Length: 222
Image (tube, one colour):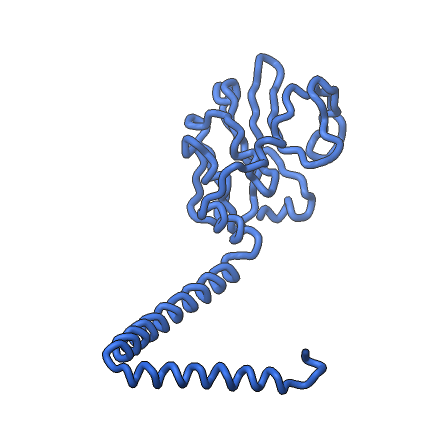
């Protein structure tokens, strides 16, 4: 993370990779993400692969020539660090995430603030679409892993997945031992009537002992 930003909480133009004027005219996504954390839902959500990262901990890079300004990345960014900016003549149409109440309504006049929170102008709400963008209708495995990585960190998720894999391997090993044993018992009992009766007697005796123990248990456990 930018050390100056850690102190001031205000980004400067030099911290951003801004698009050209012709790219702004068509409308593109602009990233203000400067944190090196395990998070990449913007990369996964882009339908034209215009956002890339060197690895899951890197800063997202936007290819402004490929970006179509659809806004999907804006709706999924957990850090609210992505915006769509489209310049029309001398005015700008900005799509941004909004997570406060009350939600502004269409055609409502709002204050326009600079990075320090100072009012510099007034603007008008054109469309209120961010709520629908944040309601994902599909869930994929990659999205779940990305969410876990961003929430818990790569080490905890890796440890958890390792434990799950170990448990699955142990269960498979147990089944590989148990299944042949059970099959051999079934085959043996079918071929040997006396043996089948003996197995049945042992099973019934075990059930009877459990029932007797249950009947003799202390009254406060009933």
